[in-house]
Structure formats: C-alpha cells, structure tokens
Image 1 (cartoon, rainbow, N blue to C red):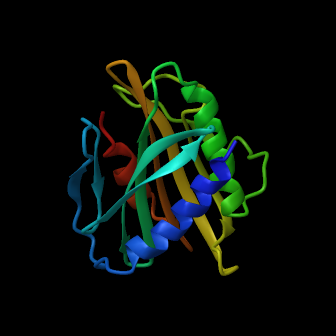
Image 2 (cartoon, rainbow, N blue to C red):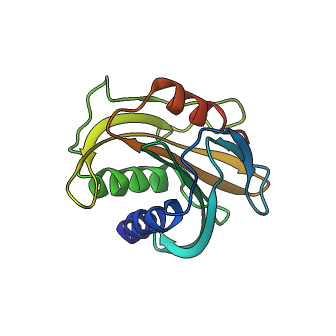
Image 3 (tube, rainbow, N blue to C red):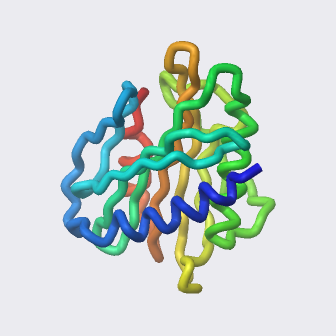
Length: 182
C-alpha cells in the first residue's frame, strides 16, 4: 500500500499551500471540483490537486489549505472507484497521517472519538483525533483531525480535515470540522 506517499505528498503540499495565505480569520465556504462537498476555512485557501496512490489505486487528491494566525488548516478529499473499501482506506490514511506527524499509537480514548456527521457514511474509521506530535522540522505541534466518507452516486468520497498548531483553539477545530458538509 502506498498511503505513505499520500501522507508525504500532503505534508509537502501543505507547506507550499500555506506559504501565501493570509493570517486573518475570515471564515468562508469552499467547494471542491466535481463534488457536492463543501467546507469552511478561516482564511483564503490555496488549492492543489494531484493523482496519488491510495490503497494501490491512483486517485485524484484535492487539497485546500491556508494559514490562520499560527494554525495550519487543510481539507483533503479523494473520490474512490466503485467497490473500493472506504473503511480500510480511511484507516490507512489515518495511520500514514499519524506516522507523518510522529504521533505514537495506539491513541487513548481521550485522543480519539467517533466522527459522524449528517450525510456522512457511518464507518468505523470515521474518527476525530487530537494528539501531540511533531512537524517535519522536529518542532512540537498539536494535531486535530477528522476522517470520514460520503456517498456520491456509485462512488465514495473520502474526506480528511486537519489543524496543526502549538495549541489548537476548540473554536477553530470545531468550526472547521462542523463546516464539512456533503
């Protein structure tokens, strides 16, 4: 499985995406190409997309992200081929993201909880995580993230949203995660 490639590419993409963002919190609705998925970001987002291997299959990963104050914020999504095991792919994506942030597993119950939103699929791998980790440069950081999936016709769309900061305000994370709508 080449999910590690997705995590590495996502980390590099975030750095590139966030370099031009405004630090002010000005929440706005953001949509994704060829999808009903929408989210809210606290700053003007940069966008990128790239074909990446997810579970051994190439998928187009769309990323929107920005920097708001000291927080780095991003939402990523990929549409799966019909019949793909969305739960297994979410689990792999989570593992790769946690490893990339050097977050040790297993997570405690306080660090991980189910994340089920209206219109999202009730998968076991749909979770919200908040845990301390490290940036690529070794600096300590806290990560708050969610992973979920939604049906789009015959396909399933995976969604991952994340906030990185030394201290994450509950308002920032809650507004980001609650703003994800299928």
